[in-house]
Amino acid sequence: MTYGLPTGTRINYGAPGFPQWVYDLGKAFGLKASTYPGHQESDRNEVGFARNPQRLNRGIDWAGSVADMQRFADYLMGIKGSLEQVIWENPQNGRRVGVAGGKDVTGGGYYNADYPGHRDHVHTRQSAPIPLPGKPSGGGMKDPFTGEYWSPNRTRPRPTGTPRWIAVHTQEARSTARGLAGFLANPANEVSYHVAVDDKEILKIVAEGDAPWSAAGANKYAFHLCIAGSFAAWSRDKWLETDASDGLNEDLALTNAAKVVAWWCQKYQIPVQWIGGNGIPWGKDGICGHVDFGTWGGGHHDPGQNFPADELVRRAKAIMGGTTPAPQPAPTPAPVPSGYFTGLLYIGSRGPQVSELQRRLKAAYKSYAGHLPVDGDFGPLTDAAVREFQRRTGLTVDGIVGPQTAAALKLRKV
Image (cartoon, rainbow, N blue to C red; front, side):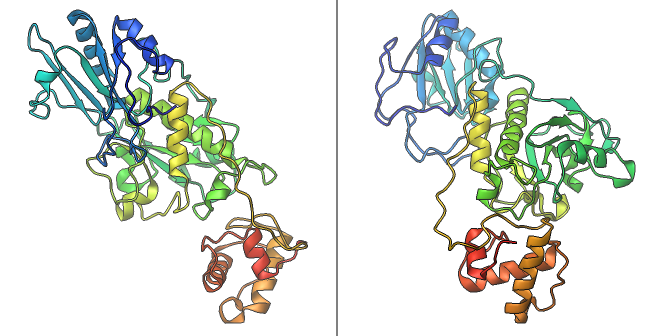
């Protein structure tokens, strides 16, 4: 559950208009909440701040007795990693509390000009509900793990402090979480992750205090999560597919990944924000992909350019807020002529439909697909040929043979 009121909202101390969690939190500390037009309605592109393109009102001022405000401010410092701002100065003893982007900035001069105006209230800015004391973020989030399947492939204990990154990996093979865990349990394979998930199971593979063998130099700097049966070549629609006829409800697997992300963000006060896309995210805390570690992390490209990072973050926030994230509505596909293949084929697919795809590419597009073997295995050569066809025909170049690509290829269903 994300947080933000409409632009220009004004709510006086104790008046209605906030969501219920605000009143519950205020009651727990003997405080009343207020806000006003322009209060933290900026879109701050800074580390530790969620983007706010709609200019929602995300600021709250909390007022009550000095003792209650101090108690509240002290509590907020204990969960600071989930907060964007806290500003408070005790008018009786001058004690200050400051948080910026989830970091403790009390000891520096960051808010020196602001503290004098925050002696009669505690100011917060947040993009998700603040949890009640004694409860996890979201007021009741449970341990998401369904089982354990430990791997010996690890560095024990981790030689650095608690990671500030959560890294998402794809498996690049068709499997289940349990099948992947069995592979990781073999010392000869020399690979592991902290957790493996699919649409049914969320398995612990390596203890959180150890470093798995996931990403070369980045092993010890992140919590590593692998989505079993997934491929970096998937389209966004494939990631959000709810049809399990291929053996995996991809959408549900993404939600299970979000449960793990929410758990780690809550437990270790890691901001629920995607920090991938700009190289190794030094100096930033949050969620990224294996690809963001570059050659230092092994030179991989997962979870792929079409990975729905925004959906992962949205679902993690919803889980932390105590709600069950609903799948995104499926896009309405463009009409496809009857008789053509209407499913999905991608790297890792196998069977007679792949053979038909290879025959069609090989016969019709000899200049770049004439060398293709017709073996029913959608491997790198078939992927390259599909991408080249998509590029030449103006389709989305994702290596996924869906209804539109199949129609353009005149690929019949077999």
